[in-house]
Structures are given as C-alpha cells and as structure tokens.
Amino acid sequence: MSTTWHILGAGSLGTLWATRLARAGIPVTLIVRDQARQQAYEAQGVLTLVEHGEARSYPIQVQAPDSDEPIRRLLVACKAYDAESAVAQLAPRLAPDAELILLQNGLGSQDAVAARVPHARCIYASSTEGAFRDGDWRVVFAGHGYTWLGDASHPVPPIWLDDLTAAGIPHEWSTDILTRLWRKLALNCAINPLTVLHQCRNGGLEEHHCEVATLCGELTELLERCGQPAAAEDLQHEVERVIHATAANYSSMYQDVGSRRRTEISYLLGYACKAARRHSLHLPHLEQLESRLIAHLHSLGLPTD
Ligand code: NAP
Image (cartoon, rainbow, N blue to C red; front, side, top):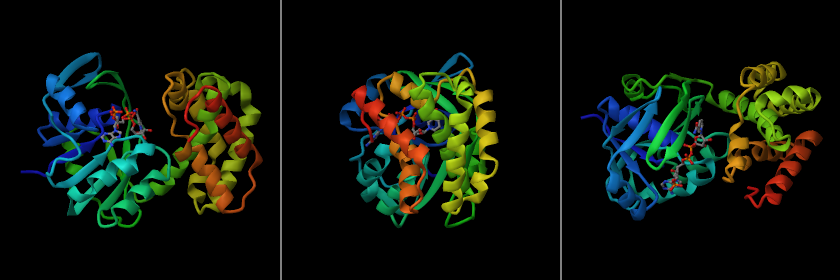
C-alpha cells in the first residue's frame, strides 16, 4: 500500500492535486479548516475537476486538523500567509520521517514552515499550473504547466515522484529550486504590482516600458546581492517576454484585488523590499512601488500584509 498523500487546503491547487492523484488510484486524504468544513464536504462527498470543459468527480476522504491519524506525506496547498499556522496545527500528527511539499508562491513562507517542523523534510515547489474554483469543492484546470520541486539542503529526489508521474502531474526535480523561486519572485515583482496600480492586463505594461525597465534594474541588483546571480541573468528580457506572451491575462495579484481577496504581497514585493533593507541596499523605485501598492490596498480596505 503506498503512502497516503495528506493535502492541506481544499482550494484551487489542493483540489487540482487531490483529484489527479485520486484518479490514478493513489490514496489521498484532504485536510480542511475545521469540522464545519468537513461536514459541508461530507454532504457532497466528492471533489470535482473540470478539465477541457469536462467535469469528473472523485470521492476523496476528508479530515479536520484535529484528527489523530499520523501524517507521513503532506502537500501544503494553503496561501503563503496561512501556511505556517496551518502546518503548526498539524505538527503533533507528523511522523518522524514526514515529508512536506510546499506549493506556496513567493518566498518567506517556506522557511517559516520549515522552522516550525525542524525534523520534517521540506520540499519547495514552484508551479506554472493554473487553476481556479468555480464552486465549492470544484476546480477548473485553467492552465497546463509544470511543477519544479527541490530541497536546497538535500539534493536526492524522493521516491514519491513516481506518484506524480502516475497521476500525470508534469514535474521535474530541481537542484536549484531557490534560483527558480527567486526568479519567479522577481518576475512577479516587476509585473503584478504594476498591473494593479495601472489597472491593466499584463500586456498593458508594454506602455510602461521605462517603469518596468527601471524595476528590472533594481531587481537584478537585489538578486545579485542576495547571492542569486543565476536568477538575475537577463531578467529584463525575460520580463518583457512574459508581458508579451501573457498580454491578454490578468495577473494573479490583479485578480486577487479585483475579487477583494487578500494578496500575497508580503511574500512577493514585501519579501524583496525586506531583503534589500537587510542588505542595506537602497532601491528607491522598488520601495516606492511597495508604498504605492500598500496605499492602494489600504484605500480599498484590503489587508496590506
Ligand atoms: P486557494 O484557492 O485560496 O486555496 C487555499 C486553501 O487553503 C483554501 O481552501 C483555504 O480554506 C485553505 N486553508 C487555509 N488555512 C487552512 C487551515 N488552517 N487548514 C485547512 N485549510 C486551510 O489558494 P490557491 O490558489 O490554491 O493557492 C495556494 C498557493 O499556491 C498560493 O501560494 C498560490 O500563490 C500558489 N499558486 C496558485 C496557483 C493557482 O493557479 N491557483 C498557481 C501557482 C501557484 P478555505 O477555503 O476554508 O478558505
């Protein structure tokens, strides 16, 4: 019997992973917020994946955090700002050889989680897959992509990557996962806040070429100072390429603000600005971008952290 995947968080990515693993016959248990959410799920009893316009439902077991079943493999699929407290709640249930897979965007939440569970192996992930919920317990697979996984302190890949292959989850073991996470963070800092402030799709930033170029210059300096020269390579060119290739899309931060959801600012632009301050690096445009974004969120009555 293969090891059960406990999946923490029944949101977009949690449901996307849970349904694909279950579809391949791999044991999956979903952990939801509390017993009220557990009962809400049990009234329906299935998770639904909508792929290529076709909906398929899978009966997946669900638990509240206070169940006493031990956990050996935990996929953390919460937002970055919820990850640490959600994992802390489960710490007493983690087996001595537990492994955690952290799907959070940005940086900062992974280290916070790892510090909470120092005996567990924490594997960091960076994904270009896209999914959104169009109803309770239901997810739409909106963008096929790739997930890179890696462990900065231990380069040997885990055996359960075979489960991902069986489940048809495109992935690659990465020996430079921090470079990938930093690069993605830099791309996010150069694009997402500006789409919120200029109220535009990604392609709208083609009209703000100078502002983007200035930010890329400062982000390059930051990455180099943080010991991430590979993540800094040709950053501006890559940012321009992404803006062009995703011109019709709204950034995830734009969508969060548009739906009045809390953003992950503290783990993206906020993390970058904090890192700059730690290195006594003065990056005026990045700092100004952070102040403008915080003021904008504040004016909308949204959390600024
Ligand atoms: P999401 O849809 O908001 O899902 C997060 C889930 O975590 C929610 O269902 C939430 O429960 C649950 N949760 C929070 N605290 C919990 C706790 N203490 N116990 C149990 N469940 C808890 O978020 P998402 O879009 O899947 O994103 C997850 C992470 O992946 C983010 O860092 C995001 O940036 C990253 N990411 C997402 C995508 C994407 O396409 N969605 C792509 C790449 C990366 P409630 O439903 O009760 O609030």
